[in-house]
Length: 416
Image (cartoon, rainbow, N blue to C red; front, side):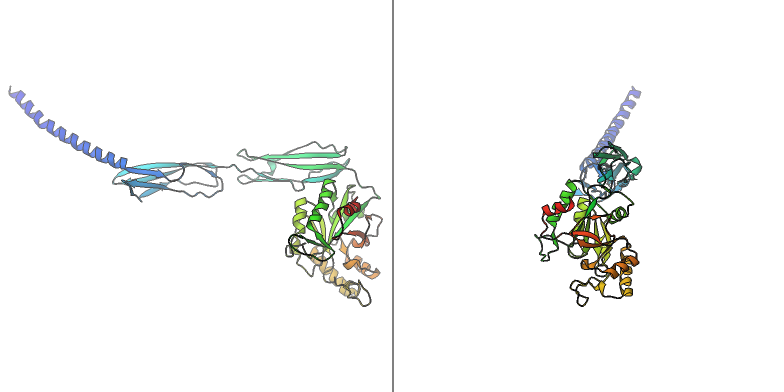
């Protein structure tokens, strides 16, 4: 009986104590749970982000509050390498009154940019019977860098049959992005050995919608485009000066449909500093021309393009009516031997070429021709209004002068 009383007394003491402990535990739990529940984290922006490799990553962070009170004690862990493809984790840690809560943003750095293929000339002419020689190509990728070695090409060229063929180039980067390019190859007949080439002579270029040009030598850019359209649509090859020079000397054969475009002086619309009409059009059509530049008048840097050769039009002898008693006598005809040679050598120094020379105002005499030869030039151009052929004197090469009044039918007659 006594033992039972002792046990009862013991439980009377223990049960309240347990209840107190349970109550305290519940209060602590409720307080902590309430704090945890009231501590809120919201990721700013998307929690899953795709980032193009190489693009700048700007983390938008998170917003943390407790009972609508903003919390600034935020720790961010993790880093995104925007230059390396992969998956990155940004972890945000918020601590408030010994309660900690976290959130995670996933950033996937990807490469969706296609590589670039550069094949240079998109259209080339191949003389019938000749083997096709690859003109060259390159490929680059924003992530892989130079991937030229991965380029594959296929073609359907029949070198023995006149016609139009294609070479198709393809390349893929390490992410599976693909690019392709196409080169058109025209297999054509060669110009006969006694064949002739139209050499066209332009001066100035202007857009009548934007400006006025009162000189008869001014060429409306819209008409110039019509002329180039005709050359392109009829598969003409626009020769570089070196190609024309090599043909004149019998070094190479050229396509039956070939033309040489020349531009005199370097004035209005021909350079970056004076309207810049000529070069963008040549580059758009991927056609070649030669500029005979008065090198002492304008800086050669204004005329740089892979589609524009630059040859000499003297350094500073392009002055009309300089010679007494000669109406169109250019300054070149009146200076002494040393003065002329020094001028020509200066122009050669600037252009870096002796391929060709153009007489100012189409004016020349035996002495000036001999001095052009002595300076080392291999060709010289004049006027004449007819086609050039290999039997012509290489220092009297004729040209067709293109003026504002030259309509498309006249142009077609020149080149046909």
